Amino acid sequence: GSDPSLYSGKIIECTWDFDNLEWIFLRIRTDKSTPNEFNTYRKVMRSIKDNITEEDLLNEINEIIRLPMYADRIKTDSKATQHANAAKRR
Image 1 (spheres, rainbow, N blue to C red):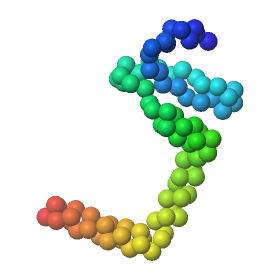
Image 2 (cartoon, rainbow, N blue to C red):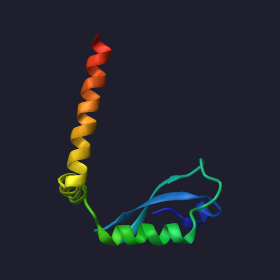
Image 3 (cartoon, rainbow, N blue to C red):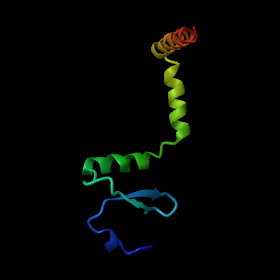
């Protein structure tokens, strides 16, 4: 709703509004001196179009950690952590 010329020469952060199919201004990025490269923009746009949810990510993680190579590693790492914690308590 504001005049875009107010942001000329400034780096801003936005979020994508899926309902209205438009960018929504969040803030001016005073912590950045250069904008993202075009390839970064393309990757972000692809990510937005993929619309991967937190639930999707958690489901994938649960599938991956069931793979034998990770299941064994998780057990080993878990035992190592338990032994380390027990040693600290002594």
